[in-house]
Image 1 (cartoon, rainbow, N blue to C red):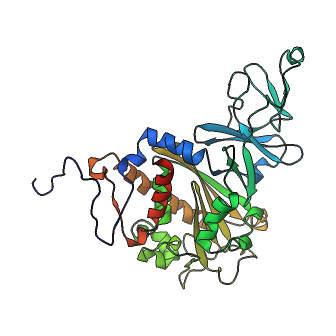
Image 2: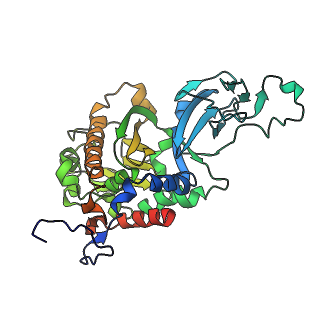
Image 3: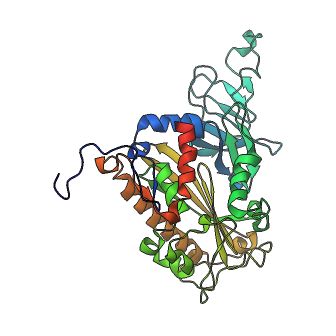
Length: 382
């Protein structure tokens, strides 16, 4: 084989130098069957962050969300309780709600045969239902989904028996910050939406998780971010260390695109957390970014093996939103980071089907912690 030629059959089980670790093989990012298994063993079994609670302010407001292969309706009833159920009529399986969001007065009616369900999912009416007294309205109600509200968001679980929310979701936050209380002072559940941007990323969801977890790329593609957080230029992400927050540069006044002063600080942020940025990955599809005056909250919705919708919320103190304060400089910083990251993810996705990546790539020392995420995926996918 001459110099520069590729082996026609890369060898499995490579022996790597001590400083390198193996990644997942390329087909983990492109194979529809692996994606289907992930839907079954990851998205259909664990807690999945779906909707900002404040987006369901009034009874009857609803959103439909995609979790794995399922469409789920999330709504608020007249007692103020958030309910969720599979978006499938129990009569003949028709899609109940076809809109992404909307509002009903008291009930959901199937557009096919008019079976009608109240805001808790109970069957309340259907043509000729009185002639079928043996039909139990509760038993033939919509299939419900487990609901938990936390940090101002609605988290759902499709499993019959959901895993412990404390051990999984809150456990991921604790493992990153070193304490379950370290996020409390930010009062995320009390913040208000200042801006929302959705990104249609042509990349596998795992590409996006891996990118968010490391900063080996920061000096290359994030000039604005490394100006604000100079330590990121050294290649070590904040997530590399338990409890660590990246410190603002000496001449940086706020977490803004030009380093200028930010907005009113969140009162509960401690002196140790001030002028620091914390990044948290909550598996499988949430990123939480904490800074002294706002929170940036990402939700991922994997659509196919090679396409992911990412919804990013910028959250601020209510008085900041009510005052009409200019949030553009803080939004612009992470919007640029998102665009830079997602472009990089798409560039990586384009190489996953190459025979050059048949056995995968490598992780350098500052990326070794990504290996734990890969092991987590392997345990579930096999």
